[in-house]
Length: 313
Image: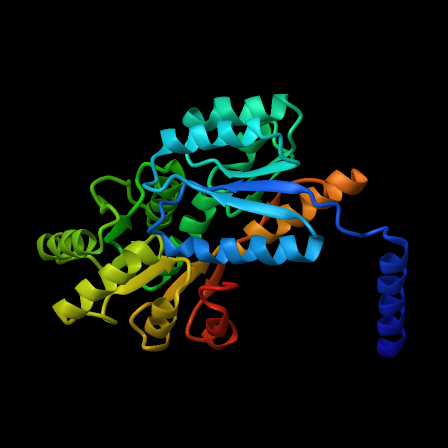
């Protein structure tokens, strides 16, 4: 049976190659993120759009505000729409800031898929085709349930991108799962590694009852891990983080980080390119939104994914 399916697939590939049914149409898409140049987490999404573009025979440009300034991001959306691409893929880093430029693009007839930040409801209000991402509150709540099951009662949430409302929802979900109100437990850490480390160290020194830590990505996880190591308490405090990196993977194996919440960013970059290409060529479109996460990476399953960290995971 397997050989028969392989033969059918090969024949279909040969047929489409001969007839040109699935040949490259050279569509042009733009993916616009809110991430500053310093945020290496987005390398996975950059890789994803490169792979998808090559496979689909489409050109995909990645654009972002170098410093993470959202007003700059809004201007980039306007500039991208002015070039009349075949589709725009964009994060909803701040609904109010980006609403105008995104809806203007939709009104021009440009297909838009939102990814990563924002909600499905916001995506619909903007007129986008769909949202591909992780429900951020639910992901934070799931992390909080794990911390609560381990007996955690007091926590700190290290937020390296507090201007993005989705990041606050992660912290809020975590707090709600622990049954506490989110307040000063959320640190506005900024992106500078030294500053993140110092703020985490200062918080832990003044709140020695903290028994759970949540970081929102490698930019805050790496310096927080360094602070815990310097204090000699790495592995003694329940530590969960969003997203994966090689350093986070090693810390999970060492028992210093309990889990990483995987929103599968590769899917956030890859799927919109494939979907927009098929929409441009054949007017076909999946129904509904796509949840790319959350999934939880722990010591039990890290071996399955660590080799892909930073490129596909």
